[in-house]
Figure 1: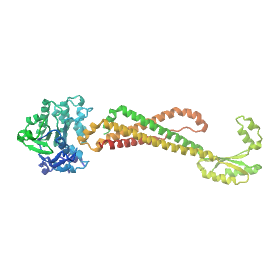
Figure 2: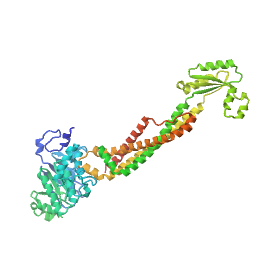
Figure 3: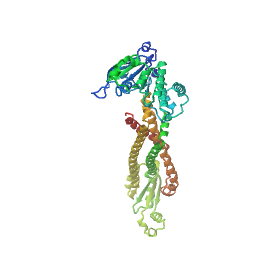
Figure 4: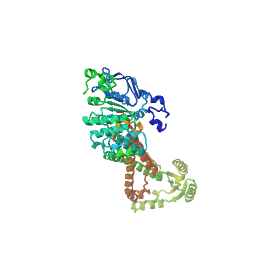
Length: 264
Length: 287
C-alpha cells in the first residue's frame, strides 16, 4: 500500500485506491444516524442523534455540562464507539473500521481540547510536527508545513520554545496548529475556550473561523453563550441525549434555550 | 523511531542508568559462571582424557617377558610410548622430595610397572577400558590403573557446574526481564501524555510501541555489554595471578569466553530487554 493511498484513506474526493471519486466529493462530510451511546443503562448519554454536517460548514455544538457534547465528538474521532446507529465520515461507516484503520481516520480529523493536551517537555515545533511525523513525511516537508501552521495561528518563529512556558492562549494556539497542520477534512474543538479569558476566547474563535474560511469543516463544542451570540452560525443543541438544530444561531432557536436548556 | 527511543532514554537518564547497572550486575554473575565453566571444560579436556595407564607387573616376571610385554604394548595403536619402570626406579621417584622413610623402604614394596602414554587424539574412555581389560588378562600383570576415577570426578564436577550455571542463568534471565519490564513501565507512566497525543494524531500501534521496544532492547544490550566489559577487566586482572599459581600447578592457561559466547550474551540481553518491554507495553498500553 503506497503512502498516498494511506494518507488519502478518508479524503473526501479520493477512493481508497487513490482514484478521484466525484460522488464522494459531494457527500456530506459527516452523517450521524440514530446514534446511541450508553454508559449507564438508566441514563443514555445520546438517544438516537440524527445530524448531517456538510463539507466546509462551521457548526456550534452546545448544551449544558454533561449533555453529551464531548461524547459526540469522541464518537466522531473514535475515542468511543457507537452503541447503536452509525456515523458516516466521508460516506464511510466509522463503526466498521478495524483497529488498524482508526489512525488513518484520526489523521483526517484535527482535535482541539479545553486542556490543550500538549506534551509539556516538547517544544512548540515538536508538538505540532508530531501530527506529520506519524504520517511518515520527510523532515523537510514537516519543517515547512509546521512553519506555515504556526504562522497561521500567530506563533511564527516560536517553534523552539517549550510549551510549558507559554501562556494558556498560546498553548491553545499550538493545539490548533497541531490540529490543522495535516490539513484535515474536519476540525473538532471540544470547549477550546473553556480555560481562556473572554478576550482570548474571542481571539481563538476568530482563529477557528479563519480555518473554516479555508474550507475546513469545524465542529465547535462550547457552552459559552457569548461566543454563540457573537458568531451566528449553525447551532446544534444537545440536551437529554437528543439534539435540536438552529441554522441561524441562537436567534433561530426561539424560546428553546430559555425554556429547556440552561447555558452558562 | 531510534531517535525517539534515545530521546526517551535521555528523559529519564537516572532510572535508565540504574536499570543498566542492575542488568549488568545480573549478567555479570551469569557470564562469570560461564567463564568458570569454560575453564573447567578446558581442564576436563586437558586432564579428563585418560592419557596415562600404569600396568603393575606381578612378582617373578623375568626381564625377557617384561621386555616382550613392553614391546607388545608399545605396538598398540593408542599407545604413544611404553616405558618400563623397575622397583628401584619407582622407589627413587617416590623419594625425590627427600623422604627418608620411602628411600630406606625395601625395594620389594614398590612393584615394577610399565607406564603407557596414550595419544590423546586417538583415545576414548571406552578404548582405554578395553585395552585395560585385555592387558589385565596377561598372567604377568597384577593390576592396571587407568585413573578413570579422577577423570570421572572431573566430569562430574563439570556436570554439576553446568547445572548450577543453568540455575544461575534462569535466575538472571528472570531478573533482567523484571528489571527492564519495570523500567519500561515507569517510562510509560512518565510519558502517558505523549502516548495520548500520539494516539490522537493517528499514530499506529507499531509507531507508539516501537521506541519502547528499542528502549528495552537497548537497556538489555547495554547491561550485557557492561557485564562483558566488567568480566574482561576482572579476567585480565586475575589472569596473571592464576597463571603463576594454580595454572603452573595444573599446567593450564586460563581462557576467556569465546567471541561467539560474548556476542550471544549481548544479543540475548537485547532480546530479553525487548521481551521485557513488550510485556510492559502489553499491560501499559491497554489503559
